[in-house]
Length: 282
Image (cartoon, rainbow, N blue to C red):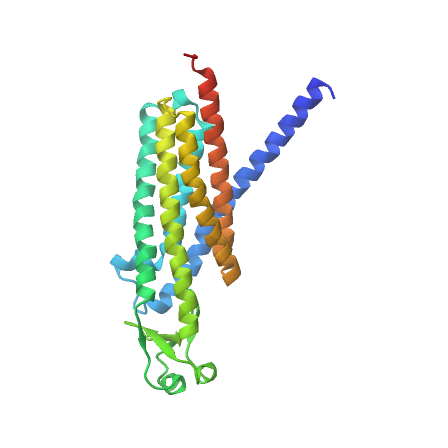
């Protein structure tokens, strides 16, 4: 094969790779809307009078969190791939730092929201009486899955006739102990996932700052890669758990994020290698 044909094939593969990468980014941006719809539906059941201002982060945690992550992903893509080192100065640098700080504020708060939601869902109380007796009142909701509530009726209460019932402590939402147990495990996965991602981006941000100063050594990258490998494996396990438990939107979202940050890791690795080659040897 001639050099021209080889170069053309390489350019074609590179173009396909970039199309695939930015398609993944667009799919993650769409998930902001998907999670908003899901959160808005659940908020109408849990917060009958509308969510209080201080608990909006709990009601719309997924959508707010995803929006902040999409913006932060864009910042990482600009820093590690799109912009050259000499462009990340002055107002560009301060603008990227301002957007990053805004995203970190919501990401940290959202992580708190996942932990708070996990604690909230473990605050359960026994329900005295029978489910069908409560269905007569017409004021109770039945939980059938995470963020999935339906009115308790004379038809669906029959399935709960012999099951031990639990309710959320401050609202009229009940369900079987088995259903609540599954929801609690999902809430734990959400909290662990949020904390692991927080550590990943803190390490990445630290690496980017070192790289901009040409101080990111190969040894530092090797150490950080070991830590991030453990964190990425934890995130992968969370994604697998969501897939097995039937939370397909969470599984799909987690899979896309792992792919997206694989691209960021590739950007950073290539950036560091290019900088090391350009530096004069000692």
